[in-house]
Length: 194
Image (cartoon, rainbow, N blue to C red):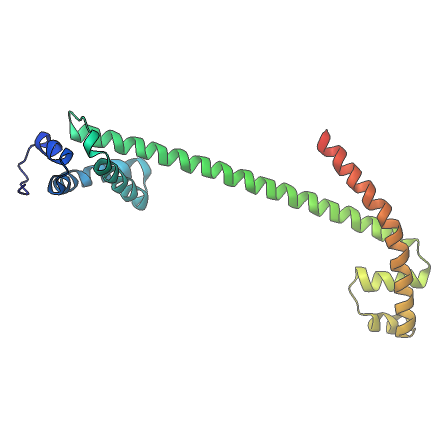
């Protein structure tokens, strides 16, 4: 086939059905800009519009043997519009999924923050029931993040004594927090069921 811009669309369609690449190229050159305009007008996105038009022509080439087209211009315009609608639908679905994931993460973070706050309050409450030196060593070291050496200096005791008080405090708190953890897990399970 001669690449002739005067070849009627009907002839190009028949040549395309026969696998004539030059007919395909002619249709591509003739309609690409028009299809791009349609896609871009609907999407307002250059890259997506180009991608859609390329996909339309790829599908046209792949299905060339089954084509039964009366008007190629209307056919390609319709293919482009439907491709745009599918693209917009996918984008909307993707946004909904992203929003759902973000909401789930925010909820999980809030729940985790709340759980941590409750646990910290429980530990603080338990530490307040410890003997005074154990309580002070535990609170300075674990809750205020001070080193044992600094705690020992602050309380005017040896580092070994501070370590012994901390060990005793941790043993008592761990024994009591175990019961609290079971209670928190039960409360969490009940809240899921309701």
